[in-house]
Length: 326
Image 1 (cartoon, rainbow, N blue to C red):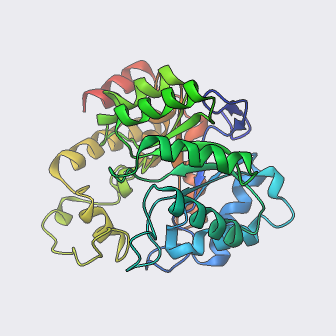
Image 2 (image 1 turned 90 degrees about the vertical axis):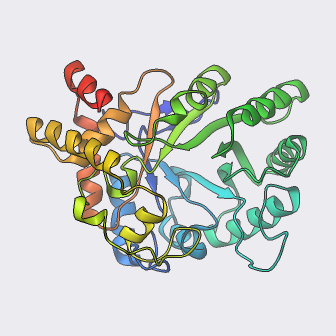
């Protein structure tokens, strides 16, 4: 497999790479990302190798991720399938600064377009479900933004399966823009999405993109068991600032269970002479069904190039069974 082995995204005809470039690491605002020069090298490497699917959000590094991408895409915007998200609040104290409602969407899209230095977004995700906004308001707002030329396709992230199914059915009934992508946390340490979300996506025509495919570094072998007892949870309540270990701890990624799974990943990697990260990503790339597209982000070009090595790794049935059992 290669980044240039494009596949169609869900029920659309849009062609995207099998591995997306995640840009939550673009910018140092949160204390652990890549600076502009390193982020540019990662971006250029991805495009040079045939990649075209770039994932960001209005919230990432306080907007710096989108701003940097706007600079990097100058002169080559049409090569990129650009995905961003709305929902999270960049205006503390403003009750309408975030959420899934129409006002939040319109404000967020306009601000993202400015930061990204573009006149349209290829794919806009609802970032996280607010459990407040009616589904018809969301889908009508998506459709209106598409008809206005602000975006081309719509997707959804981190929302209950029954709500997504309602939204897709409503769009079909009303002739509104359908959802074509579902973004969920999916990895060897987070497989709950296999119960309802992934089968739903397969049935209703949503391509699946996977965030945190390395379990916030756990599956890459970054942490050992001495991290379990470390008192290092001084990051913010959202779990995005501080050290990478603080971020992993705030999301409950550092557990005996997860480190045991990481041990098995390391064992398979040693059998193959590959890195743990490549094995964990290859497992996702070989999931059955509609095809899962990992979103891979990195703080350094060396890390990113190592992750790309998963594309030419084919795990055997025995190795897949060993990982599944863990």
